[in-house]
Image (cartoon, rainbow, N blue to C red; front, side):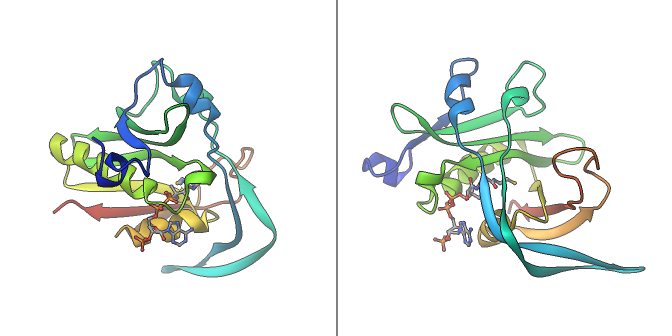
Length: 187
Ligand SMILES: CC(C)(COP(=O)(O)OP(=O)(O)OC[C@H]1O[C@@H](n2cnc3c(N)ncnc32)[C@H](O)[C@@H]1OP(=O)(O)O)[C@@H](O)C(=O)NCCC(=O)NCCS
């Protein structure tokens, strides 16, 4: 499924993930982000508002994949961006037949490759899979602190469609964060 740029040799090719063969490459992928701004969630009795807010020092977070690649994984289909000797990106999703929605579970591009269209190319591969499966929309969850990813998703046409202030375990890595949901219809 190589796009025009990868055919020209400028960017990694996109192909379906192959497990367990890709496990080592996926575990080597740097999934982290750093941000000096977040979306603070302001709530009233009848509304929620996202307010852009600076944070100092910057927040750095990563998404460990160790527990996400086994036979008990919850995603159904994945695609990787392959550079030859390494993986530059990964997307994984699951089609939910009951409401015909495809949920993006993972999307990461290695820092050295960011800003070169790989995230968009991975999303396009996920979209093709979702369409073929019969999905009417793509849907995803991210955190209110992942400001860079939210910019990316909005640029890709996703719209904020909900939130959950109780999703994350107060004893876990995402304590105090709010889950934000974004969706994009598949025309
Ligand atoms: C979010 C992420 C996947 C984007 O991948 P990417 O390869 O850098 O994105 P692309 O180069 O395909 O960008 C596509 C568009 O989004 C825009 N974009 C990407 N990141 C952006 C950012 N931080 N701020 C503003 N716009 C951004 C690009 O400018 C581009 O716009 P264009 O179409 O006008 O050129 C990548 O930054 C990443 O892996 N982040 C860390 C992991 C993460 O947080 N994943 C999401 C978990 S929910």
